[in-house]
Figure: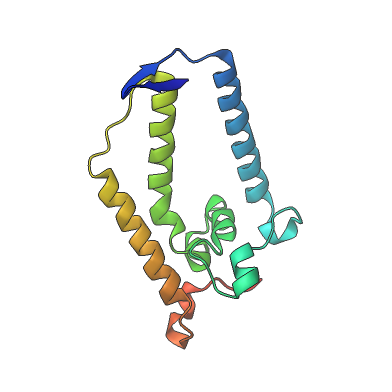
Length: 149
């Protein structure tokens, strides 16, 4: 769809295949969220355990986020935050980034994002600090680790 020639961007009209891919992607996402809301993720065999945690024993910044999303979809905000406190603050950024991508692809307009680089660097720093702090074995920091289920 977007082709770059000599630092100039040429944007073509979306084809029916572009719309089909978008529709398929949205359908898969909605289907996954419906299934995730219906049953706890530990009841599904197809959702694997975190490979990073399995290999190292450490909790990555995303550990517990699928279970947190399950509780968020069911309106249990405090339980959502208990599994992964980063899910709620990062959700608006994910939605905005997806809208920017879709806007560029289908409307041929990019939604402005002043300070984009600073925001993404800030998120990366927060994730790294969260990763380090949640793995410090102190009793007071256990609120940053997801409960075992």
